[in-house]
Length: 84
Image (cartoon, rainbow, N blue to C red):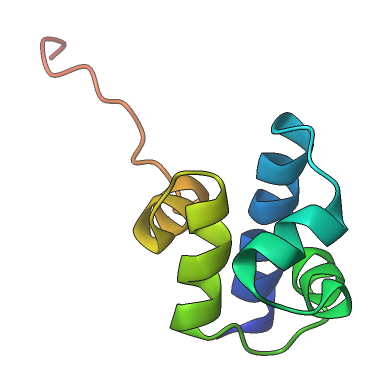
């Protein structure tokens, strides 16, 4: 994954954790990863996030990996089709 993309995924995962009011160690334990790994992912330091790891972390929040990725994808600009 590209560095900026990895950072955006990490930021989104941190937002989900904070909104869920969960501690990093609890999320890491539920996802079956080391707390330091989750910390590196959330900070964008981890250069590569495996699909399986992302899937397991997303599942802690009741989401799919694709939900996390969709949340960081740029949204298309709204257009006014009725205007000339």
